[in-house]
Image 1: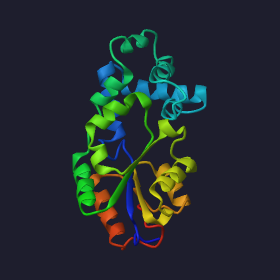
Image 2: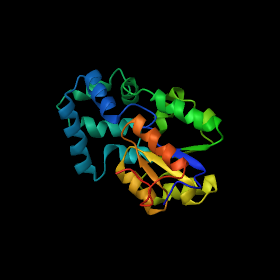
Image 3: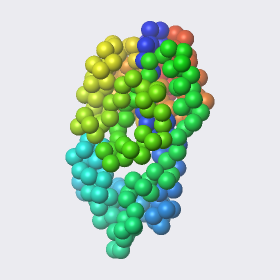
Image 4: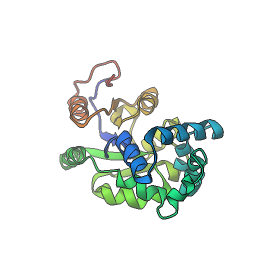
Length: 223
């Protein structure tokens, strides 16, 4: 499907409007005084124990930030729980999370040209003041669909349908930009063209290609 007729550019938050998740993760580990590999293994162990990633329940509002952190800390060596004695998880996390200003500027240009923009994010109730303080959310986006408010997260098709309903557009009238292939694939299953975000320069080029109506017919999607 080509990008012809795209009315709304929909973007993800983490890893698209911010620096990559891997950077944030490594900086969080350093600030917490943890080995990055050990922290990654703790996330994996918590996932296996609870049957879902530590972030999954948090991002639909089923558990609190503290409960999520406790799931991870339980998989780390004894004494690790003291890491959060003086800091909230989100405080340390957002020290390593920075706006992707070049892409934000690109979106601002799209908005100024008359293009509609929306945000579709898997996010956390306790973190909303932090991430909104980083970005010109109200300036850029006419619709924000946030997983913790909806009780459902990407890649569940329900959250994409919520987005389409609020925008009052057909799937082919959106272009979705996300840094996770699973989320892009879910969008494509519903007929929403997608761009897999790998870096800003490439993403800008691919978005413009879609908007100019020159995207390949094979879903118009990056590999």
